Image (cartoon, rainbow, N blue to C red):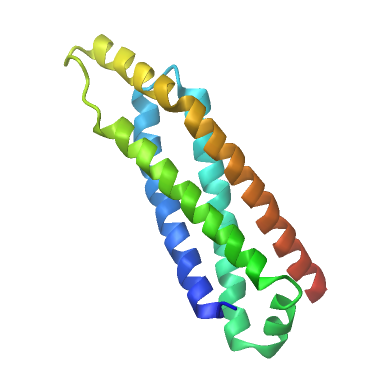
Amino acid sequence: MADPLSLAASVTGLISLSAQITSVLYSFATSALEARKSVDRVLSEMQTMNSIFSQVQGFIYSASEESSDTERLLMISLDHLVTTLTGCVLIFSDLEKHINELVGLTGLANVAGMAIVWEKVKWATKEPEIGMLVEDLQRHKSSLNLMLGIIQWWAA
């Protein structure tokens, strides 16, 4: 079974990685005008996940300090939490890889119009894979929201 501090460290890493991905995607979105809608979808998921990770992190830290919060943490399966967080790490790693490939590709020309076209092409080649990763991330988001709901219900 995982201890709360190692879980908190994992969540801290996820928060950092989601912020990094969001930053790169935001700057990419300003140049990939036509792909803006799907980029915005990924950005929205990153921001939502960042918020959820912050809630999980806050609860884990408080559970390591107060025995009543530790009892609430036992209302969910820690193995399920670890599995869900591990899934998020894997998805974030794949997203980071795809986004780094997009950012790492260089344009065909320095002409502004040509660069915008190239940004659209780069995003279009990765969009289906990134879309599937976002769907997987949404499933993990649902699991984390359910776990947080159980924990918060127990506190009421």
